[in-house]
Image 1 (cartoon, one colour):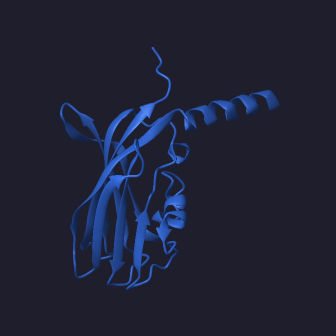
Image 2 (cartoon, rainbow, N blue to C red):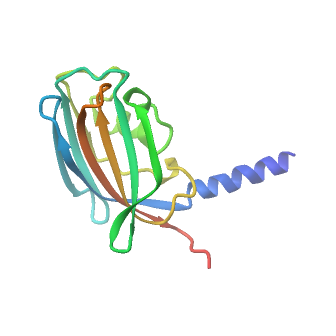
Length: 175
C-alpha cells in the first residue's frame, strides 16, 4: 500500500512539472472608467522571458457577489477557439484559487499584496510575475492559449475584460 502511494505521488509530481508555461503578453480589452482605472505594459523580464505590469485602482467597492469569468481559447487553425478551460467564480473565491499560481501572484508580485476585501482608491500593481508551471493543473493541452478574464458586478454590469496570452510546452515528447 505504501509503495502504491509513493508511486501515485511520484506520477502526480511528474505531471505537475511536465510542462512549462511561457508568457507572451497581456492586454486590457475593455474597462469601465466609472468603476476602475486600469493600465497595462508588456516587457521582457530577461533575455528569454516576457512579463507585464498590470495596475488597477478600484473606484467602487468590490463585493462578495462580484463575479470573475475565466475562458480559455486554444490556437487552432489560425485563430483562437474556445476550449476546455471555462469557469465562473466570485471575486473573493478567485483570490484564494488553488491553481494557476494565483497565490504567489497576488501576495508576492502585487504591491500592496491583495487581501479581501479589496480597497477602493488603492492602486494594486502586479509586476514581474513569471508563472510557476508546477502550480498549474496537470494535463493542460500543449499549444498557444488566450486566457480571457471578465469581471462583472453582482448585478451583471461588465467592469473589465483582459486577455493573457501564453504557450504551454511539454518538456518531454511522447511518440
